[in-house]
Length: 99
Image 1 (spheres, rainbow, N blue to C red):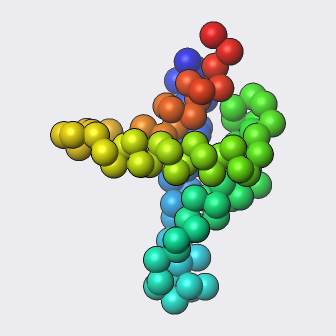
Image 2 (cartoon, helix red, strand yellow):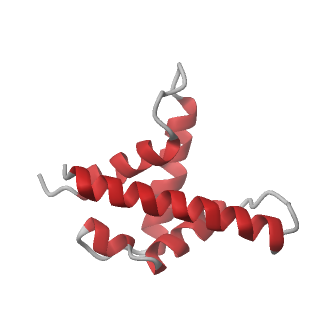
């Protein structure tokens, strides 16, 4: 796995988290976004996730990675020391590795 690629995906996930926070605060007036994974996926795809992974990605594929990865991360006991963006970036880039 390429550490630079994982770092770039992590940075994009963190950017997405900040943009989504703004979206929830302004557009949704502070209401929790039940469709957060779809919003994140669209943002990630629009902002170059495919280029970072080295292949084309579809929003639905990314939704599955996000929702499944977040559920998996949330169920780990004890709570992981790495943040969710680190965990998901590692998971997403390893899923893209051809090896």
